Length: 333
Ligand code: BTN
Image (cartoon, rainbow, N blue to C red; front, top):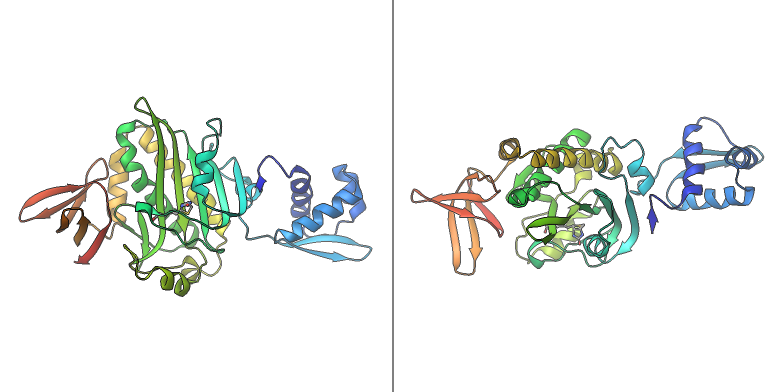
């Protein structure tokens, strides 16, 4: 596990290599400037390489950082991040059962906006008790929040988070995505990301929200589709890498944290109108005929709008009905 507080020696060496990546730095130089032993320098260089950074070394001359890692390491997230609090603390795991479970188990004194990242999850959780397939290549994160917003807007929060991610995908990758009610993000009708929210509520006050976000960034679509094809709510998988070959996952994550902080600020001041307007603009659900499975059978209707609380309003035979949870299927336009 790596966190933004640990690995300070390693980060010192790395930051120096990044700042001087046009020249070679000898082990002795690094040791003198950073006031650490040559053995420590060597150990850090070895570790930095293991973390996916490319370091060129020339005998008797020194080291030079050639390229960055693709791993979403805590210090990469914090570095240059333009948020107030979100993402300023991060924990990275190579492999974990579920970032959501990990985030839930962390104590209340965790900072607002702390991010838990996993390279892969062995027991990823999806909505409605489903499994979430989380191999290496995706972005699997949970964000711990201590929201200031009122409990009355909590049901809009997952939709607002999906909007934030869709905005981030567009801004950082120049890729357009759609929003499928309640909080799926799709590309050409296939699922590219999903959100899951767990809440700790005490005396009608939100103590802690855990936003779990799964992004199929660079995953093997065929392989995941094969596993999921006979499961409920499966309608195809999309991978962001297919749409954009160059953007680094860290740019998307940083952009998402900025957008998420912004929608939370809107919720804090009660400006739900903007969220609903922007969500509707990007929605592939509104205007569709949709179908919902309930315990009492299927409900069908035309999706008309979302209410202030994020509920989907569908109309059938000139009667409106509010849907507050579950999965819908888009039937036709
Ligand atoms: C969905 O079903 O659409 C929601 C999927 C949420 C998956 C993410 S991956 C990171 C976090 N940890 C989990 O176990 N689940 C969420």
